[in-house]
Length: 632
Ligand code: SF4
Ligand code: SF4
Image 1 (tube, rainbow, N blue to C red):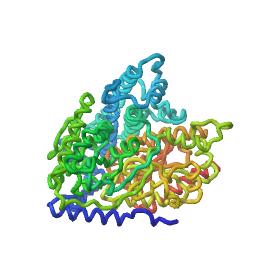
Image 2: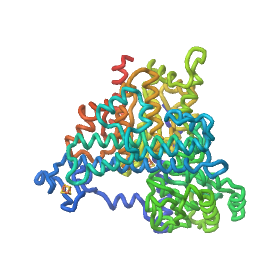
Image 3: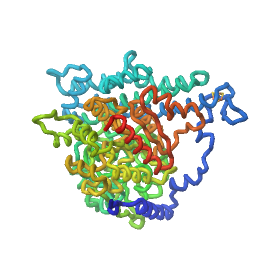
Image 4: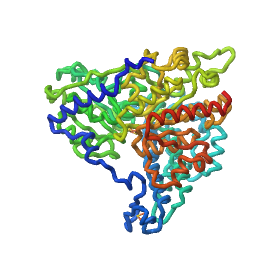
């Protein structure tokens, strides 16, 4: 096994250190320094044993004071905190999905937003029982968007997309009483349940966490993904580049950061506008270079092959290059630190959403109705800012890799069709994948997702785990900042054939896919749920029986907790490298990680293991145990 061609963590850290040197020159703050200032963290917060949901408190649980003033015990407090954590994540993803529904509702012939994938729109309409025959595509788009928006507050029934799951999974959800109803209702009910004097029964709190998570994964996130495909195109495999070296010294660099593709797609479009390119040349640049950070970066990489400059903990690095004319953000995972940091350079920090207002930014409110003029104004501002660069501060570390991206479920099935004998077998299924897993050429799959977290040496857990899994013939499907970690290291390079076990190498060569498969942004984890459902149906087994697990080794956000809940609730064991503030309660820990609770209700549970080597071993054991249980 030769890993030599990978960009190492040490190389990435050396590049970051060079950038921090530039930061020092201009008196910039950094997350590395702020971590030091905040360490050690409060032990009560880390264990989840403090409560401040009413003004009789704050209360904290110790052996001497085993109950809060209201009498709530440690299990109730930890459980309530966990549920609120989930609700925050579910609300965030779901609001993103709502925004996309609104964008779909704004589409019109010749407008800023149009329907790029009418076939997918029609498929969803059929699925939802909406008549398509003889309808204008935009009338249909508006009807589907409106139906989607009603999913957020409908008075009766459950989420429409639940029907995509195998019947067995739907039954589990029904029997456990965790089928998500209206999306907003689940978040709102979580807040109600966790009010002082409502639920303190651990079982009820964890069940609502699963339900709020499901309302995200099989509701808000799924609509976000599906309608983004309808609007901007369903991703297909394409080649791009990754790491900080994608920024160009002689060009106007615009970084898009955040989550919502409605903004970034428009910025990408106007950066190619001949008028803007001419303007860039008139200020002495060779052109306009767009690169992405975090999930907005993933969205435009998946659909437009826009380079990925970095993931969560590299967001400050792009400014520190001194070559960033504008960092344009929408919502989520944006460090407020970017405001003061950009003031140390010529960089314009452009906020665009009323949901994410920050000090020291230029606020250009982005509306679906005025998207074209907003995007043009932002691009123009960035181009005109090129002349304000301080050449002495410009330093772009030369780290850059090739990456193949764009694996939607549709694209994966298309690749699998390439190895299907269409005279004998159906195309458009996951059967070829099932066959190689059954035969043992592939041992199984891990869905690796989630963030960076300074508690883990950034990107190490992602990359080391991927290497270990690949070596063991386990294919890795990726999203979010985990995908970007792989891309930055060079693991997504389609030519990097040596980085895996013999069986996996053969499968990848035959099917023509890279060893690690980029499935998109964080909302696109919903794609993984659809893929798991389809595999279970094609195989004729339950999702929980597939040799498959989920993993978030460096997670940090509430969204990641919501994701964890819906992945577990879908029947997929989920491995975490950072503790979800639950260790203060043995009962909550048992419900989440033990053999009762989640395991009994949905046939899967969490495994928390902060030793990354052991985390990898446990995943491999889990996959092998599932194989043994299937007799394969
Ligand atoms: S709800 Fe109970 S435990 Fe929480 S702060 Fe109020 S009194 Fe304390
Ligand atoms: S993986 Fe985590 S840090 Fe990265 S964009 Fe998603 S939620 Fe944010």
